[in-house]
Length: 124
Image (cartoon, rainbow, N blue to C red; front, side, top):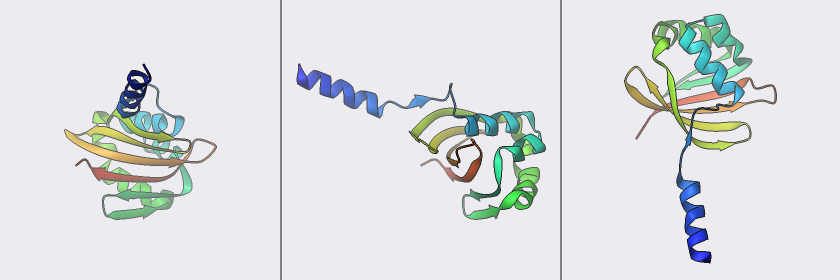
């Protein structure tokens, strides 16, 4: 009996969490991206937030705005979180469908639910 319970517990830990009930910071990002609203998009971030897009880093609202207006907002309506791969208080790693690509997003947020740091990486 112990072995069966232990194995069931391992399966539960290995099962990804589907992205139906997203943390506030991540939900804000997805909603603002899909609505293609740059002001709502920036409202998801702290003023000094850091965005790392693969190997490029953008710090603060002005830099994030310029990057997002060029590369995120124009195709935003196709952004969809598929599942949450890792989750703990203040951080999550998600799998995202973005313009026919599968990308991993790492989010860090503060107590107010604002994104302090994001990192985007192509899925392996």
